[in-house]
Length: 121
Image (cartoon, rainbow, N blue to C red; front, side, top):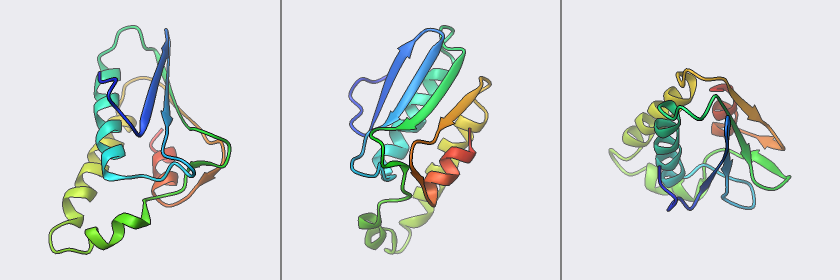
């Protein structure tokens, strides 16, 4: 697993893994965060030291306040929304099917895609 992630942080204290969303101030979803979550949970699925995963937001204002609205204009371009929706669906599927208990520690707002992320746990 990567330590080069910029929008999530993984803290492992066996048998626990804590995945923190680190996109202040509201931990909004971004295409890069979706890719980082996918990579992280792919690795956690095969990590024998991890028995349970917790996902939470950095700070105390928001777990995840949905998708980054600054990305909306780009998503309106022809053909742009479907690949992102597929990536989000795949990433959430990896969380839902992790095979290990996954807990959403909702520590503030959970809106739109952030609520979907919490419900995937």
